[in-house]
Image (cartoon, rainbow, N blue to C red; front, top):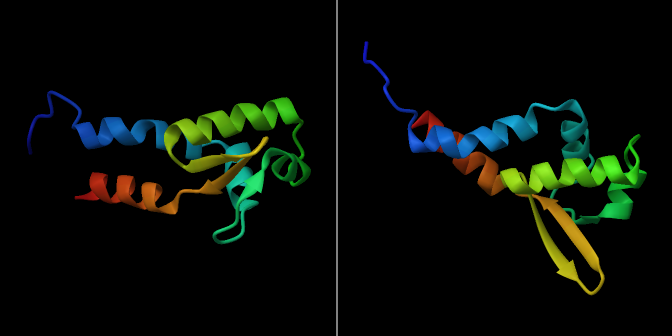
Length: 95
């Protein structure tokens, strides 16, 4: 057995992702996306039982964690699940 004096950087990097994925409302938002689908906020709100303000709050947390990526096209912001980031961060912790 080894003594851990400091949390490894890989674990520090994934803590925001664990927090984001640990909330049922955010899980529901992620599950609303079809494979490779991009949705704007109105589409996400429509698929949710939450209001726009609450969805915006959850999107901010998901985006900050890297679980969602986004791109602004004109006046719309489109979001998509960043599976590569999620898988990479989990793999980094497992290695």
